[in-house]
Amino acid sequence: MPEISHQTLVIAIQAIAAEIRGLRETVASGEAEVDDFQLLEDHLRAAEDLERAYNVAARTVLNLPPYDELVGD
Image 1: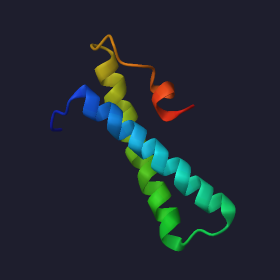
Image 2 (image 1 turned 90 degrees about the horizontal axis):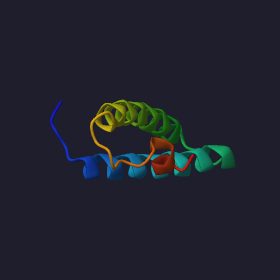
Image 3 (image 1 turned 60 degrees about the vertical axis):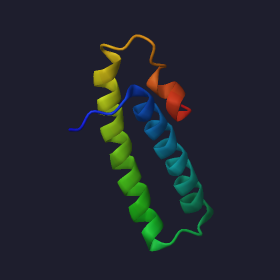
């Protein structure tokens, strides 16, 4: 896996979390297209990958905020 900066990882996590929130709102509103369901699934998988990478980084980087804080949980 290519190396990315911790700041880039944080921003990617926040961006994916925001997209997931938006897609969930679309699905909940009943106005979702078929593609929206697939996009949500893809973003959820990406979020899982990013969380795994973040957990690895958090073992050695002291100033990273808690993951839940980044995703708004």
